[in-house]
Image (tube, rainbow, N blue to C red; front, side):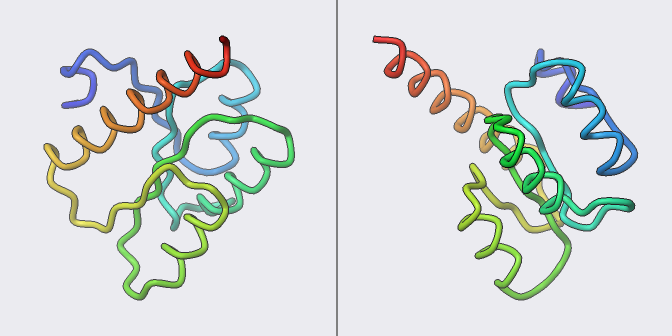
Length: 111
């Protein structure tokens, strides 16, 4: 896909349960979580991550209207929120921004 073309290593999963299994296996720089997925919603996956102290930044996407899920995800500590349909360049820009911000934060916390 276009993310792989942008030199990102991408792991795609079918649902929230699979996402948690992948998170148990390896470290990720960023998660793009759809709020409406089978098994466990994106918000539930994020909630479980927080409980397990997995501090991977999460960018939420949704096709849902209304501001409730956006507010909820940002209050939980999401790195960002995008509403579908999402233009590829907007998604790439958002991903780059989150990763750069995260690198800066890591550099600061090490000193």
